[in-house]
Image 1 (cartoon, rainbow, N blue to C red):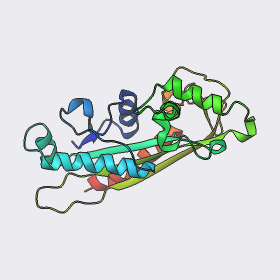
Image 2: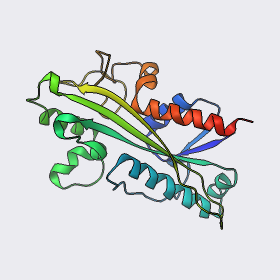
Image 3: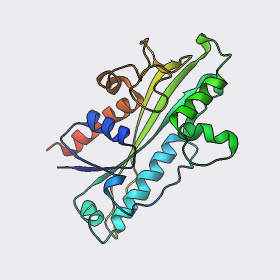
Image 4: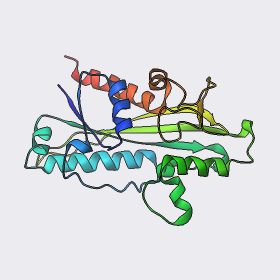
Length: 224
């Protein structure tokens, strides 16, 4: 069974990835592996952050000499890292790569900020923007890297991208999901991501589209 190390501690994201990729693989997150390196997501693009996370963890696994990290590398574990966020046209593409720490930017803090604070800031900035100008999209880039054995050349990560177009509502609605889900209304729907069922969201979301491409690639790699 192929093992995927998901470069996240976000349990919502782990559940979403597992639901989309299916039960035929073993999934581990950073919660399951002690001693993983801390990674600062300071790239200026989603792809840059995803690649940085995937390569850093793949290199760490490849250099590991003790269990369980060394065992994962020996069994051919793949590292799966993603970066995603919201791009709002009226804000020039913000919050973009700063989506998880959007509220912190205005007061000099670092690190991620609570979803409620990020959502409140977004609504405040869009207060005077009419419905027709509130277009936005969620974008996700997934990077997949394989730990290289000592003395072997490192392979470049494979990248998979997904986009979901939509618009920002005038207030939060729904209790599902996380992040900006209560504000984002995907194209073709009246409900926010937080009002849609997990089944529907996992068909149309940006992460679902990127992971669907990854799923096809994984199937091709495992084909006889």
